Length: 79
Image 1 (tube, rainbow, N blue to C red):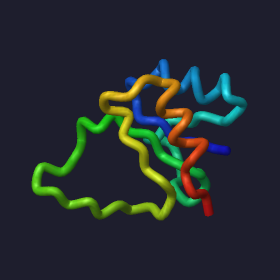
Image 2: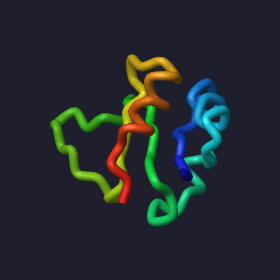
Image 3: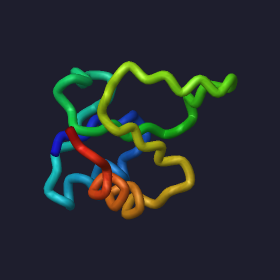
Image 4: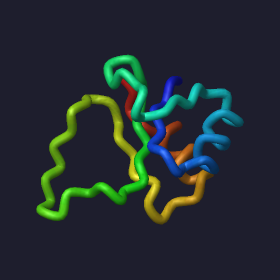
């Protein structure tokens, strides 16, 4: 699994790599070439717009431990 990770989530990056998956920087990722995206949640739209520019699962790490993020990735429906 290839996971694009937002900057500032080093503990999540390490947990993803420990799970045997590839973690790449979100800023450098081609979203059509990743299986999931993990973001900090700090960029949530204040108006409630949930439109995304990708069809892969997007997981907000806000309030989650690195292990919880990995569990959500493992349970995510992948295309």
